[in-house]
Image (cartoon, rainbow, N blue to C red):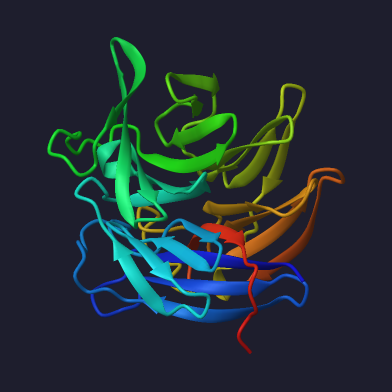
Amino acid sequence: MTVLALTTVRRGVTRGEPHGAIYLLDLEHGRAAHVVDWSRPAIDWGGYGGDRGLRGIVVEGDRVFVASSDSVLQFAPDFTLHETHCSPYLKHAQGMAVFDGRLYVASAAYDAVLALDLATGRFVWGLHLIEDEAGLRAAPFDPSGSLGPSPGNRLHLSSLFCDPRGMFIAGLRTRGLLRFDGQRIKRLVTLPEGARDVRPWRDGVLFNDSLNDAARFLTPERNRVFRTPHYPAEALSHDDCSEHVARQGFARGLCVLDADRFAAASSPLTVCVHDVASMATTQRINLDTDIRHAAHGMTAWPFDVPD
C-alpha cells in the first residue's frame, strides 16, 4: 500500500479559521484521512500566505517532523505533538531533508539552511546563501550565536534535498538548482523562476513549475511536462478571490514513488500520479474544492493509517 503524508496551506484565510492541515492519502484505495487541523492564532496574518499553514514534512524513524513558519514540530506517528524546535534564524520555513543524523530546514526569511541535531534536539549549524556582485557563495554560521545573517529573503529558498553527493538547494530566485558539497556552492542547472520542490532524480531534475501550472522532469535530452488539472468554475469554492491570493492549478508538493513514478500536487488540493516512462497521468485524487487550499510538503508514510 502506498500512502503519502501531505501538509497544506490555506492562503488568504483570516484569524480563527484553520490555515493548514495534514492529510494521509492512500493511493491504492483513493481515500484520505484528515489527521491534523492547524489553527495557530499567534501568527502574522499579513499578506496572503505569510505565516499560514504547514510546510515541509519528513519522517525519520518513529518521529514525524513538520515545518510551521517559525518552528519545526515533532510529532509521534499518531500526531501527538511531542516537541517544538525553534531558532532565532528560522522564519518562513520551507522544505526539509534528513541526512546523517541531522534534519535540515530551509529558512527563507534568512536565506539560510539550518541543521537540527536529531540526537540532541538542538540547532547546531547554519548556512547563509549570498549572491551579489562577487557571485554566489555560502557562509556557515552558528545558529545559537548572535553573528548570523539578518533577514533578507532575497533568494526565497524553498527546496531542499540531501544525499551523499551534497546538499541540493533551490528557491524562487536562485535561478536554478544549487549544490553545496561541504566547501563550495555551485549552480548545476538553470531553472525557470518560480520552480518549487526541486530535486535531482534519475538523470535530471524534477520540480514543480508553479508559474506555468505544471510538474516537469528535465534532462539534457528531454523536457517532460505534466500539466496540473483544472476544474470548471462551478465545481470550485472561493474562486472569486483575487489571483494574488490564490488560483487553481498552482503546483506545489512533490514526492518520488518509484523508478518511474512521482506524485505532484496542485490547488485546489489535488494529487496526481505521473509516469515518466509512459508519459501518462495514472491517477488523480481531489481532496478539497477550495482554491485557497494547496499542498505544500509531501512524503511517503510508513505507518498505519487511521480508520
